[in-house]
Length: 167
Image 1 (cartoon, rainbow, N blue to C red):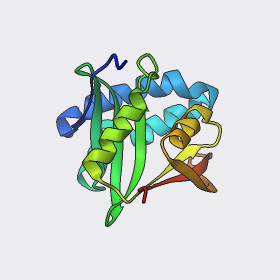
Image 2: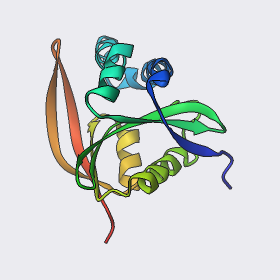
Image 3: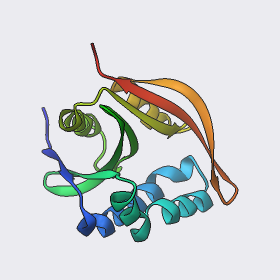
């Protein structure tokens, strides 16, 4: 039985501070077991400060969706079209206090319904077992292992994963 109503709401510039706040809450709760606090703070400053989010929305053509659970924003998604029917999923986060019970899968299925994609690619930290398993469960496969220098002496040790539209 589904106990929650989940909706994706396309975000706009008025939602930037909310996304920044959600990112801080989610990252501080989830990532300390995966990466250092110094890297968390660096990445939050680099990708989730108001100015960066505005640039992502206006100049980089990233489309953000708020994940509303029972009409409350509890997470967000950011996706960029990379080709005809092809997308890169750069952000998919739900507050840990509300995660589980299929909420992420339901949000992902809504995203598929909105986009009607042929493919979706993403990167995920190789130590992020919970997310890797979530992506496996939702039809992603590992394409390759990749390390990305993100500056300031930090490196992201990731899997590149891909979802393909079923035949």
